Amino acid sequence: MPDVLTSTEAMLAVDRDFVHFELPDPPGEECGVLGIYLTESGEQHFYNQGISVKELAYKGLIAQVHRGQQNTGMNASVDGRNIIPLRGPGGPEKAFVNGNLLDALPDRARQVGGENRYTTIGGDDGALPTWHKTRSGDFALNHNGQFVNRMAIQQQLPASRREQPSDTWLFSELVAQEINHEAMTTPRLAAALVRATKIARGAFSLVGFHNGDMVGMRDPNGFRPLVLGDFGEHGWMLASERPTLEAVGANYVRKVAAGEIVVINDKDGLTSIKYAQAALRFCRMENVYLRNPEDPRVRKMRYEAGRILAREAPADIDMVISIPRSANDAAQGYADELGVPLVMAIEKLVDKKTGRVPRTFMAQGEERRRKAKTSYVLNRDLIRGKKIAVIDDSIVRNTTAEVIAQKVVGVASMVHFRSASSPVKHPCFYGVDIAKPEELIANYKNPDELARSHGLDSLAYLSEEGMQSAYGEETCGACFNGEYPTELEGYNPHSKKMLPLVSVR
Image (cartoon, rainbow, N blue to C red; front, side, top):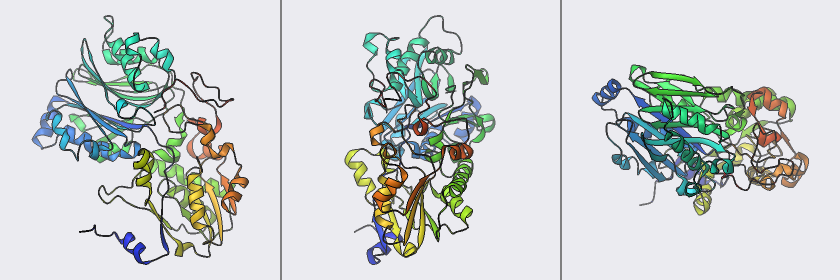
């Protein structure tokens, strides 16, 4: 028996004004991390309530699946010394067969880590968490970000340990080596991480486990997010985003600060260590596109970006339409500023099995092309004969603008395309899939040329000043302006030659 059609699909079957089309997502972020630590009494309380911490972590990974679906991993421990890793390809449901494979993890674990991973190279061989045996017990690490000096890290390792599937595994080898130093102080994992990051440079939000400690750590620039939550007196949680905490019933406490390590264990509870002076450069693309679109703080910033964009690049229009979902709030701001309605003429279809919007950038090869085929539907009747502005969060490789133009030009009487961010012109070495300058359309065509090539009446970007006003000045905008906050191994921004030896995952 065929699947029952959704209401949208049923309309498509009989109404030519509804048009399916494929549209790849903007660049992907490499991963999301989380960790849960229960006290002894907290584990007993959860057990009495029929709550499993590994099930909570699994639910948290599903909540932040928008951050990565190439691999999913978990690590669990009852005593803090013996850690069991579990990894699989795809998002959480696929990797763990809708939770059935969680039986491989201990039922009464007190410490559980997790990772949603997105990768451009390395594939399943680089799946996280990393896992090592050390003299003082097992060590597991989950990492969001990217290290930019692979050769410098390799030089600190024995020749037999230098070839690793990703920069995270290479860094993890360095940390394990530091843990094994006889003179290492307590807390051992925190001290080993600090020593390792004196050598390894780049973007890192880390959740690690060793010898009874759960550790959260952010780099001094704070490129990637990491937040702290609690379960009252029963335990603690770390996650990439606040909505992940809320999805599993944890209370939001605060952000982990740039240059901070938090150590959680039975002896001291929560300890905060400031290991480096903060020089904030939070990733601007996180706020433009990558972060959870349901987060109210993110929505406010995107809305303000849309209002500024309307003031910088207004248009004589009847309505605004948005490319769901990350552009919706910017589109609302643009519409409100100009006093016209926002009309949701484009719908991103929901996967019938998972109930979630698919993110096609995380699939690979044929799977990516297959997933993209019926991702969106356009209601042409809503825009027929109208003067419209189309709002997207960014223009990167030009795929979105090209496809949308093909669908709306000639149906609407006038089409203006607007980007709620500046032109993307440079690669990212801090964990976002923007790798090759020659793939970025802004390096080849100015807005007028791009508009003409697509038959648009105009095309405009949010200015650099507008981005700073909407998203904050203490952010990293390297992919927009080429101003990299750290030194890069083997890359010259002026020549735009790619970094040859850094693993861009």
